[in-house]
Image 1 (cartoon, one colour):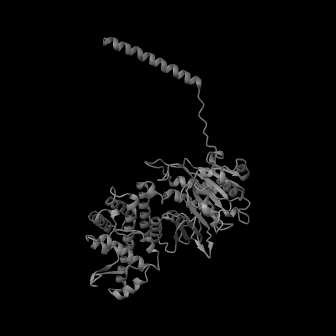
Image 2: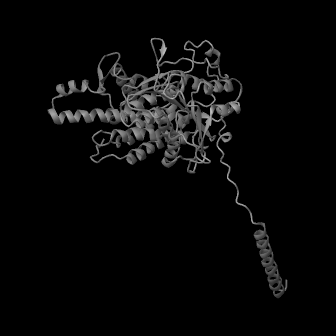
Image 3: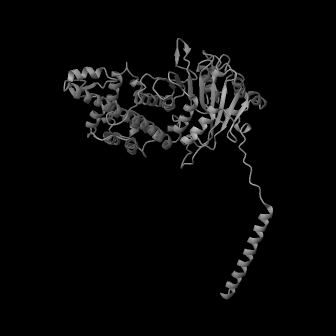
Length: 520
């Protein structure tokens, strides 16, 4: 395996990482092979970081293995030695460092899938007290028939190791942000390439950035995403702060997506982030002393209209999160909203959530919960986004902003209006889905922060006016985007018709003459 001496760029990583996918593409569903690709890249990353640190210690202290070993034990993570023995004779069969390089050297082994699994297991066990790497590698299996029969599997894994070997991810060659961005890039490509199954864990970067900026997190705040997926939205919120003085929390139900979130946090250097695996609605795990943790900022793009979300147990919720009403069992949108509002800090917490448009106007239990939230003066803004932004659906969506500083005792208690923004035109058409550009994002954010009406784009509406509309939040009720058609000059149009008819008559005469000359 060769080592590069030039700096690795974002595009280098993007091209190489996506090219590796060709090893699997066409024979295995992307929703399956994404886990192997992203785990392999993560292993390459931590291996390169470990060896980069080891080399730096050698340069500083010389080749003193014992001293360097002691220093490496204090490092951010450890890569232990693996010793394989014959179960009968106890004879040592092989010994190697649990890292990518060792696997690359053994890439032609007939049991390479098993060796990868052994390596990951040793790394997880060695770092159990430092990081949740045991959760990262818990459900991944490289020695499985999902990757084909033994011959096919070995060939694919060998090619994957060879392809990733040329990707230099050492910190001395590539910025940490570049690696993190490459990881997010891969996740985004998988979401677009794989359709719904792989897209369930992904929020487009532009939507994540918009949501994070609208939530407006500040240094020192605690930020939570109760449906965090692969943690891209949490990381965007941290980026919006401008420094690393934030605390990140999340919960995710799907095991493989939860593992992605842990890897994403690790690669971006948020080792202290608390990410739990479980169902936030049925069993919230961001709890201390049997009480829900509270947060300055709560953001989420939860599953739209989730069926069987837990309505059957909501009435007896031990945290009483659904006191404004229990949403329908077939639509969990207001269950997520209720949870997010309850875990926002009283008198100051802010909530930003992506919802389908039905949340704005559906009646029944949802209508009653929506009314209570508005009567409690918590709703701050409603922003309608363009359609076809997501890889999973083409429907237009909206962002709801809630601010608990508006409730009794908060700084904004006296404010009594809601800002409606129709941003449905803020996009650039693309091949498969629409794209929100940075100019669109900044225009929306500036409008929301200014909290002023903008002709055919934004409107400030009192709660009394919303009540007169039966608490219906459908944006066209409040933002008039109608464009009057230009008036038609009937006299001019009639003269144009006369002119065209005269020209047509002249053409017909000429055609008859030509046909007569031709004897037709």
